[in-house]
Image 1 (spheres, one colour):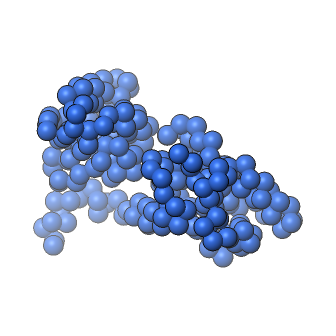
Image 2 (cartoon, one colour):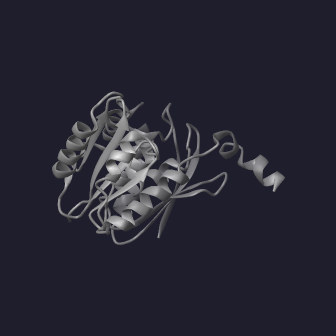
Length: 141
Length: 90
């Protein structure tokens, strides 16, 4: 099965650390890589680096770019690469999203995976005190 | 279909790396494998780490394991074993 590749793109070192955390949990991830964009990096250099990262992880099934924040430079530069059915971006990357991208078990299209990763990222946010008091919640309901 | 009740006994509970270990093991079986919290009925697919993490199973949590498929007996035995061993963290 060809896996959909992944590139995490962020300001500072966030991207690399997210990838390192995901690898600690699920094991080595050869189809995902990270690009850190320095606060003062040249746009053309950053663009080249993302381009190389895409080439590195691409297995021919598409590449999903996970960026830190919509509207930020990493997202804006990544957006230059969007190509239907080949390269897609999901913003607001968190650890569950990286793990979702890491654990592709069945053949799926880039667009299907992008949607799953987006939904996973949103679903994985909990106000934990609420979650840990199910009894109280039931009473209130 | 086979069922058994399990208890999380390791200090850190069913945390990310322990969950990953469970998911790797579960993934080796053809059977469908579900874990259900006894106290609030949250159900997780044991083959998905993100699903297992939603159980938020701290130490002492009781979980119902339900296995169904051709290799259910072996799956149940081995999964019960890693819970009994506290995911190798005892």
